[in-house]
Every structure is written in structure tokens, then in C-alpha cells.
Image 1 (cartoon, rainbow, N blue to C red):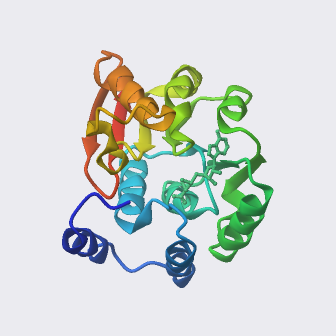
Image 2 (cartoon, rainbow, N blue to C red):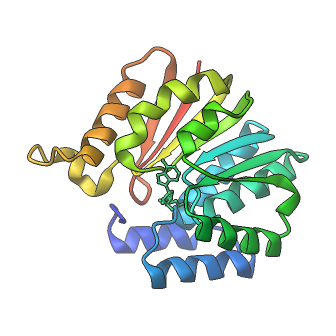
Length: 211
Ligand SMILES: C[S@@+](CC[C@H](N)C(=O)[O-])C[C@H]1O[C@@H](n2cnc3c(N)ncnc32)[C@H](O)[C@@H]1O
């Protein structure tokens, strides 16, 4: 869901530099299937953060068919190589991701897991430079105590859908997903362990530096 006016959202996406045809195809697939990828402007932001901190090890929770993974993989390649963990519990999406990411030339960088994302992170050795979280929103608060020990100090946590189409402001909405976004917002923004901002690109992207 785009929280900006369509004109501003289109403008921001139009500023994203040219990208491979395969990535464009993945955007078209998202459009036709109504699949919630992060989109070009947020993808560029993820790439930028990863380049700025020289990220070599990245863990994604909730990877879909590999669109966000591709942006991180591009940064890791340019940073000198490393690994990006692609984690989704749908076997079909994982298979589709393998096809797209192979086509993009990133196969050697990606570690695939078909499993529940938070438990997979708990079972994977850190430290990571970036953790990206895009799982079911009710699962956001419970993911934080798995993320903290795996994210290096000076690393960055990125969480998508932090404006949740504006539902965070609707007091009558107390669904588990909306409450999950509210709760994780409090956990990060009120903690001295993090320096964070929510950028109102698309559906809201939290970028949090781990002190
Ligand atoms: C919003 S989509 C991911 C989009 C992806 N980040 C992108 O921008 O290309 C979330 C995906 O993660 C899966 N998912 C949600 N919660 C999960 C969890 N706890 N463990 C594993 N996969 C999960 C969903 O089924 C869906 O395929």
C-alpha cells in the first residue's frame, strides 16, 4: 500500500536509477499478482544503507520471491561479496526466488531457507550487518529478541510497513497485525539501544542503527 500520493510515489520511483530488466519484470509480476514487494524507492534505500555501511552479511525475514533480496545482493556484491539469507516459509516462493536471483547473477551470494523466519534467524550464526524484517506484522515484536543478538553493534535493522497504510492511527483497529506494528514501533523508538527513523516511503520503512 502506498501511503504517499500516487504522484509523489511515482515521482520517487522514477528517480531510482536504471536497473536490470529482470528486476523490472519482478516489479511487473508484483503489480499483476498484487504481491507486496518493497518496490523501487524502498529497494534503492535498502541498497543505499547496505552500501553506506559496507554490509557483507545480511539476513532477511520474509523474503517473498526475492525482490528485496536482489537489492541487498547487489550491494553485497559491490561491497566485495558476502551472503544474503533469503527466508520464506512458502516453498513455491523460494523456488521462484532462485530463478530470478540466478537470472540476476546473484546465486553465489544467496543462502536459501524454507522455514519460519524468526526461528531460522535464531538457528543461524551471526553477526549480521543488516537484518531486514518483512514478516507477518503480528510477529514483529517477538522478532526483536531474536534479532538483537545477531545484529552487530553499528549494524542496521530495517523494518517494512511501519505506517501500515495508516491503520496505526485508527484506535478502533486492534487487530494483531496493527498492534504488532504499534508495539515494535514503541520497542525501537523508546529504547536507548537504537537510533531510528521511520521514512514515509511507500508504506513506511524503519531504519534503526544498533548502538
Ligand atoms: C511482504 S512479503 C515479502 C516481500 C519481500 N520482502 C520483497 O520486498 O520482495 C512477506 C513474505 O514472507 C512470508 N512470511 C510472512 N511471515 C513469515 C514468517 N514468520 N516466516 C517465514 N515467512 C514468512 C509471507 O508468506 C510472504 O511470502
